[in-house]
Amino acid sequence: MSLSAIPHFFADIVEEEHELTIRDLCRICTTEREHIVGLVEEGIIEATRDASGEWHFRGDSLRRARLALRLQRDLELNLAGVALAVELLEEREQLRRALRARGA
Image (cartoon, rainbow, N blue to C red; front, side, top):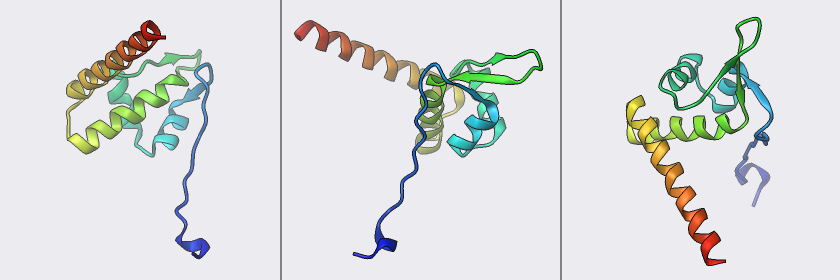
């Protein structure tokens, strides 16, 4: 197998406490600023503003943004549908963790 036949993967490891700018989030998610603004306005991800008015995001916003953008693209959901789906998926994961903890 030649090297050109091997798929390339890129990953960004971001800790939850790490702060990202909106530019960082757009670059990592390969999306436009307007998409990120929509996610904030719908309450899917949270942003804080610094003294200059620049938006900053916690590292866990990256996971939520990627999930939301994938749901929007793959299932053609509107932002309200994406917000509900993300909430339900996270609730399901919390329930699974609780069940595993009870079984341990």
